Amino acid sequence: MIVDIDHVSEPVKVACDINDDDGKHTLFFTLKNKKPLHTQVDDQGKIISDAMISISDVVFDEIDCDHLLSTHSVYYHNFNGTGADIQDEFFRDMGCNGTVEFKFDTPFYLWLLENM
Image (cartoon, rainbow, N blue to C red; front, side, top):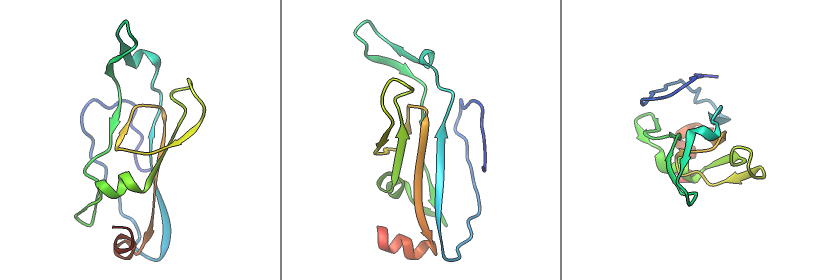
C-alpha cells in the first residue's frame, strides 16, 4: 500500500517509485466506505449529488498516461451492493466502492510503445 486516505475533500497528489527492471506490475485504486447517504437523488431517482473519486494527471516519467489508464484498466465493483459483481470499463471516475486495476510491464518505455 502506498497511501490510505480516510476521507478526500480536495485533490491529493500521490507519487511512488517503480523499479523499471523487467516485470509485470499492477497499480490499484480503491474506493471504500461509500454509503447510500453519499448519493442524493430527486423524486424521480435521478442523481443530483454524489461522492466520487476522479483519477487524473497520471504521469510516468513526465508522460501523461490518463488515456492509457482509461484503456488498460478494469473497474471491479457491485454498484455498492445493489448489483452483481462486474468488471467494468474505467473512465477515470469511481462512484462505487470497488477497485480499479491498471496493469503494465517494465521497462515502461517498451510497454508504452507497444500500447499507445
